Image (cartoon, rainbow, N blue to C red; front, side, top):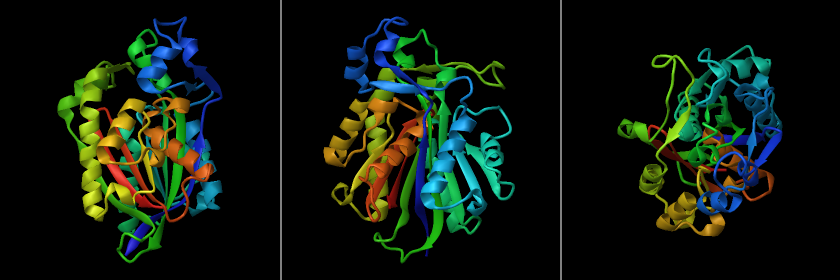
Length: 323
């Protein structure tokens, strides 16, 4: 059977680093308050010349270089983002053009923080369906553009960045030992829309709007929803938490990450955490964390890796990959 095998990973971050202490003159907060409640120490903020497209392009080029491939080898680009350069066309086609790629096809996928997990599952279906042999999957965000910088409950949480991976069609036997995407579980429930949303849009206000969040409500639902899709993914693959080599969760809040891992019985040393360095970068958080863990040698060929995310909508999902 066809499997979607990871060939390479890459990341890109804006030049500017904003430390927790930098907020102390802007809103009523402190480095200690932010770090204790979220685990965040710093985040990257895009400059005027840095956009979702430019960061996505840089991450894509890094992933291609890591894979030993060029844009000519790619059939499809799937970009997960909630902060596109334009309402339309899709920012994916802008990245396609920036890469000098004038073949194949490209589109954006919008599932907020779950976007990259959704995009990997989507790319896997295109590969297994025979519509693409190699797919560039990107998560790129500039959430700093939609923050209310006077709202201390949200402005300290988010950052900008991009991560990418290259998936390639490979052969498998259909067993858990195969390399590639092995299982996925995706969910959404629009009843929770008002708990995490942006208060604008082309069809409603005609404006971009700003991010609004009921933090306690999101936290209350997060652990249960996350464990739900992970357990469904385990069931599909016929494995348990003990079989995992690495857990790469959405980097939103260290408390949510820790609580989810404990509930699932995933050992702390198997959890990849980068929220302290990047903050919540929405759809970019999982690929950024992946790129860090691959670059420092933690994630190696043959490792069993679980990806997970939850975002506005609510959307949530998990993907199991043999590296």
